[in-house]
Length: 229
Figure 1: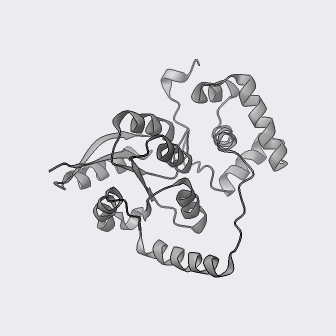
Figure 2: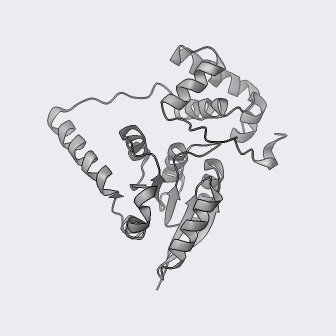
């Protein structure tokens, strides 16, 4: 029997270990890799080509939503399941728009995770029941009212720049993470400030936190190989 291959992406080692133990007890699922930040998750997903990626929302370097968006685009055979302690509508809708196949709350995941992985591998979606009920009501309302959705004013690259600025990275460090020049970073930073009407780093950081772009629950994890980039 071919096993479902799963990749774990969470910034807490204890969470990844718990998931590895939980999934390891299943005969049809195999964990083939893990990452502690969104940037590494994208690279490893491209390299390992897993069937399913379990992705936390609050990730350093590249948040879970942007990492999910890139994996969906660059590893089309992989299904991304968001596993998060955030269950508000904003986070859920951002994940859905990024192409996630499902969204599970961490506090109930042990009961639902195996089923979610199997359903995602079949090409189906899976959401924790409370989230599924909310989404169903919201989508029914939108179908009836054709309510327009407000688009983010920032591009994907600008969102990445905003997250890294809010996490305390310097221009040089951001250029290293994204493999671009410092002038390109400065150009994007100015574009972000102009679009948002915000012209200082402290206010940019507050904006990033309030809109869910970044969740500063600890110091950023700098990828050592890129410090001098």
